[in-house]
Image (cartoon, rainbow, N blue to C red; front, side, top):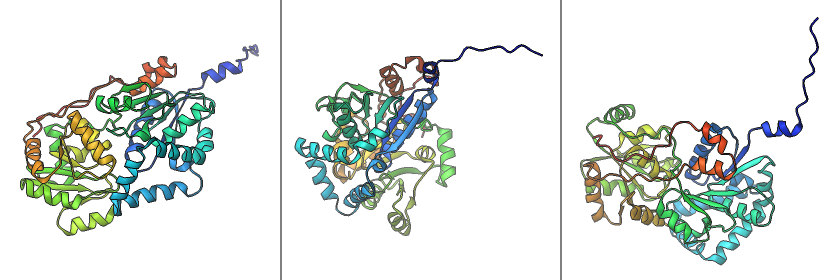
Length: 392
């Protein structure tokens, strides 16, 4: 019979220390851009060894408040864009912005606090109202963790700026400078968090993508997008693009706007609904024409596809258009007359898309939380976003 070996008891503190640290990400299903960034950040933090919780800010609001909120915003964009323009401009007023922040802290503050367990080491918001609530909780001492805001827009509205959020991560020097001009604290330029499936286009990948989507291998393709809701004047954009350059064939991503998709298809336009394989569709395109300045722009840049802004939606669409133009990432065609030369330059590959560059966002977050030992778990080396290749 073997001897019974008594092992030393492990202290509770050692067990606690052995648990992976937790990261909490708060996004919002208002469109798809905030969630896309949050999902990619979740993936990369998990790769570093953290337990990651991702919350939708709308779910932290009581009852059906979140549904009413996003429904109202959607209706404004779709049926009365001028109302969104007025509201967006009005919220740039500090008094109105503070009122909004106070209201949403009252509505979501307790649920937000419950969403942050005691073992939370990293807190990141990718949505401005969530940042405002987190900042106010931080100021009142109701949460002790450092709070970070990832600025998903290329332009920085005052609603993003909470002086009580510890740091702000911007995807380019242009939004970083705008953030520093507001109340944003500790601003860093980071490499954009884009799904790693968006890789630089090559001749081979373009040929495969054209076959995948049933597009002529020798066509010149303009990919038109209006976000997950298919917002904006996309039907007019199709007509303007085709008139500006008859060589181009338009492919329109309508997102979840099935009414728009049906109208375009009836008119003989290649119109798609919600697309899961955007990396492949991006490789099929010669140029991206967009109107909001969201995550799709950075996905196109990562794919080496030139981007043009045209017929911007009101509010953030206009401010993002100006910021993208200033940064040299996406020229802004303010009129039909300006559209033709920009399209011609894009399909001739005469202009390279600049490569935004910054520190790795995950490394920055881990260092801020005192978790530098986890950076060794990060896969690979950060590669800057692609410049345009001559893949045509």
